[in-house]
Length: 415
Image 1 (tube, helix red, strand yellow):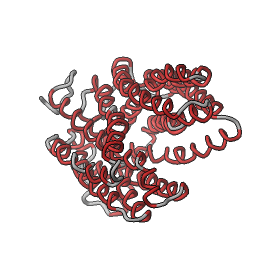
Image 2 (image 1 turned 180 degrees about the horizontal axis):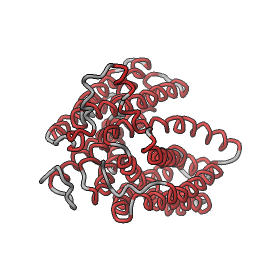
Image 3 (image 1 turned 30 degrees about the vertical axis):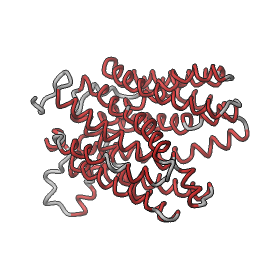
Image 4 (image 1 turned 30 degrees about the horizontal axis):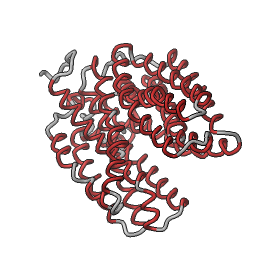
């Protein structure tokens, strides 16, 4: 295959790329969810209260924000494959240190270090995929890679915690590092991004510049040039809406069903499982729609659809049967939209700052992720979670309609 041109269909190399990058994303999401699922056991082992756990998780989240930006910028300078190859073993090492922690302070340091490294996988993986996949199949390919999150962070992490973590919460962190080796071998067998090799991200011609000139010409800053401003603002708004739905809805629905609607924990757990399974298939369908009908129409439609389904959920989900019936369409549409937001973001950014630009946009959504739980907690205490869900639903509908008229269509180009 001639890698300097884009074929219309997925060649053998592209299928290999999708499998390897999906494995990386699956493994990374498994590692990221382990500590959350095992946190009750960790709290009991160290005698921790909710306040200490909150500080530990806050430190990990802030560390992750810095890590994504650092490794995204590094990938623009050193290459996608080289950085990704370094992230896998380094992340496994810090995961092993989490298992070795002897007190809450060591746990906080190890978890923050792991979060710093593992967060870099996101911008590098999806930038790599976007630059290597053919335009006509890029949306679908990225969606397949992204669907690994449901399998890793949902199914695999839960099974490891339930089957391996019963004897000791430390064991999954030790065993979790073992699959890294075959995945690393797969990454090393990939070819470097031909866009990056072509000079779009290599920073050629900077050798004679002073350090001050190089700082002023820092790649991550280039996304804010006038020519890219509309695209970057659109990508930022898209990612902010997606973050709002995840932090403000997906993480609160189990609480909504159990506390506000009086259902059993078994129902809440079943809801979350079906929600993730439906989202896995939603990823693939959304990617297919993005390739067939365009990024703008697909993103707009799915945001509006999520809003309408969320309103229906709060109105109809008064019994266990109604809640479970609403699970599949809500998970299908809400989780399904995320991969196309990744595709759109990578396509509108310049190649010389694509990975760092993607990380920068995510960095701007961190304050929303931190503020949303507190806002929803306060409003839900004063009124109800239903009110919060309906407000978020209206925002998603209005935002989806606005995007249809304001966001640029990328036409599946990588420049």
